[in-house]
Each structure stands twice: as C-alpha cells, then as structure tokens.
Length: 236
Image 1 (cartoon, rainbow, N blue to C red):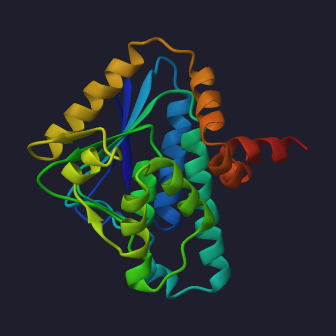
Image 2 (image 1 turned 120 degrees about the horizontal axis):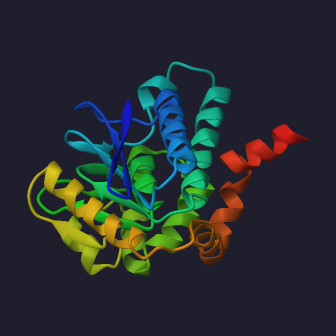
Image 3 (image 1 turned 30 degrees about the vertical axis):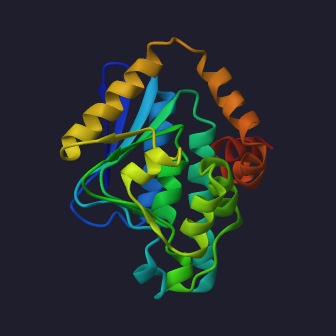
C-alpha cells in the first residue's frame, strides 16, 4: 500500500499502485505506521508524501463504507484524524507531492503538510462533499480555514465544489509550487524542496511545537487521536 525510502536527509513515503488510493482502514493504518517509522528513524530531516498513478488520493473508501456498520465509519474517521495529528506532531518539515487528483479526505491529507508541490499538467484539489451530499468533518473545515487563506477560494472549494488546479493553487496561496512534467518530476521537486528545509538543521521538536501553536484550533480537534495521545493513554 505504501513504501518508505530515504533520499539523502529526506524520507519519501509513496502510495503504491495505479489505483485511487482510497483512504480506508488498511491504507490509513499503513500510512500511520510509515509516519511512525520515519519518526523513529535516525538522521531524517524532512518528509515527503507522494503517490503513484493518476491519483494522489480520491478520499475515503466509500465503497467499503457502504458495506459496514456506521460504527466502523466513525472508527475510520477517527483513524484519519489520528493521521493528521501524527503529521502535525512530526518533528520535521513535511511536503506533499500532489502527483494527481486529491479529493475530499485526499485533499485534506495533502494540505495537512507544511508545503504542497503539485503537478501542473494534471490533477486538482477538490472538496467533493457538497456534490456527493456528504457531511464534512469538523477538522476538515478547520484545516481548510488555516490552509486556504483566500476566503473566496475557500468558499468555492467547500460550498461550490470547485476543483483547484495547481496554477490556481499557487495564485491563491494554497500550493507552493506547480511543477511541469510527470510524476517523477513532481516527486523530485518535492524532495529537493524538503532537502532544502532539512539543510536548515532545525530542532525537529521545536518545529512540531511551533506547528501546533500556529494552528491551535486544528491541533485541538485532532490531538487526542494521534500516536502521542495513544501512547500516553497506554502508560496510564
């Protein structure tokens, strides 16, 4: 489902296969395990998350959700809330390499990183809930308030279901760089950006605490679901 490799001081997590990378329990668990392994590994200075194929992630696994009791929906959403918490608490800079479409929870996953590098020729950021007739989680809304600074762009994404291209994302201050070429070019650009951040030699724990302080409302909505909170409960 995902791989972890190290390129210089950068850890690269890649969602594998040419599928839609739907965020069901198995993929969320694999991602959280990958992030935990990066956190526990020595010598890492930054993280990049990328994906193979046409999609970065097309959101929650709705096909799975239609076949299981509602309680499992709640569990899946809690696990994804925990993944966002894990990224916010990660003691290193993070970069999303948006190599294709990033919709709904997939869009949230991309924007949960410190920086976003996006493919210029293909893919979009898309909050599909209004078109799909689905409620939006509270922390989705809080993350979008923090990560989409332009109020009109935020309205258009959430209440109109508009799809944001890389060029529009750069113009609106949501995307840091739009990269020409294919998936490999986007990943290479994201790794280069992450390597530049790693070279700053920052204290990772300070980075994590500043991140939490910068987005306190978002952190407050996810912190009880993260790996740190789970470890603390286990010690009680």
